[in-house]
Amino acid sequence: MRAKRSLTLLFVFVFLDILGFSLILPLLPFYAATFGASPTLVGLLLGANALTQLIGTAVMGRLSDRYGRRPLLIVSIAGTVVGFLLLGLANSLWLLFVSRIVDGLLGGDLSLAQAYIADVTDEGNRARGLGLVGAAFGLGFIIGPAIGGVLSAGNNFARPALFAAALSLFTLVSVLLWLPESLPPERRARRAASPRAAFSVQALWEALRRPCVGPLLNVRFVFGLAFTAFQTVFALYAQARLGLTAQSTSYVLTYVGVLAVAVQGGAIGPLTRRFREKQLIFGSAGLLALALLAWALAPSLVALLIVLAPMALAGGTLGVAINSALTKSVFPEEVGGTLGLGGALDSLARIVAPVVGAFLLDQWGSWAPGIAGALLMTVATGYVWRKVLFVPDLACPAEY
Image (cartoon, rainbow, N blue to C red; front, side, top):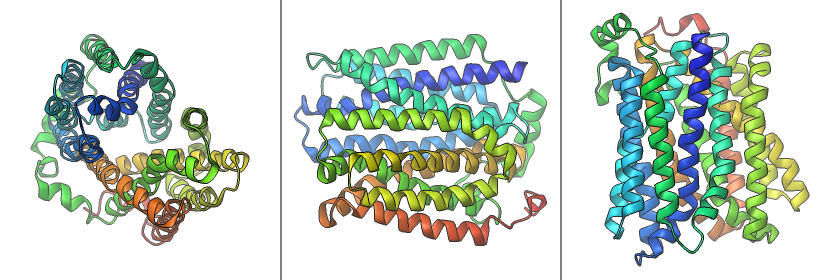
């Protein structure tokens, strides 16, 4: 009962967190433009948050293994509150940069929420619990941009930023009042004494060299590159290939969000009951390769809408299955740090993929990002076959 209540609370917290993030994200370029930012500076502003998250997510996850999930969640959400307040009260471009850097360095609450779920679930229902976080993520991205558009009427970009700060403050108070710690003191003490819980760059780097963990993290990074490129260049693709307007594109993205919620909120449970996570990783990586190829070559809007269904199924399943497998491939005292490292790799993908995806579309055509993503996922599928699918479960994490 306690685990179920905690999962429900985490669903609400992640939803509110993503709601605040997604309602301000589409407005940042316009907000920066009011301070005279060039397109290059806008790109740097967007990249500053991802770059600092690269550091912050790994650090916060590792520290949560030693000091508990709840204290680090509180610090992370408090950082988000401060970041949004700075954003809403900014009177210069440099304050916009400070706001995004603060939020990035103290971010990582999504990885912390995933680590919390790993603490309160067993291996049989962990993937379903992680799927609920993904569903909250998708639901927030469906509703957030619409709310942001309403609040920014009259080019008032401070209003949605302050509203996002209010949402984060409510989340912070809720965590303080209602969310219990998932790691009892004796477990935290045992983890703090373990050399595997030591916080260092070397400890994080060594995770990539482990036979059970490294391949999963590598696949997660390649998946992040391919899928982030799809997400970030989708609007340009829709305009260049299908001639869609901004309004039509927003409707299609809402459709994608609904599909993502349906997959992670409903389909993950039955899939994990029928298949092993490694099988799901292999199958969804292959399906994503085919879906990205079909996306690149879609001749019409109808074809695109059909293609996006297996895309959402593959992407949603792959992300959850990798995270769930990671939590089972390390010692308990490493779960937070490993998920944090995975989040850091996601941040790195969000830095690289938009630049490469836009370059490919600009230089080669609207089909190029999809073809490149399909090639990446084809290689990843073969890699999963060799390095992940047939590794005995009992070898992890005992071999370390």
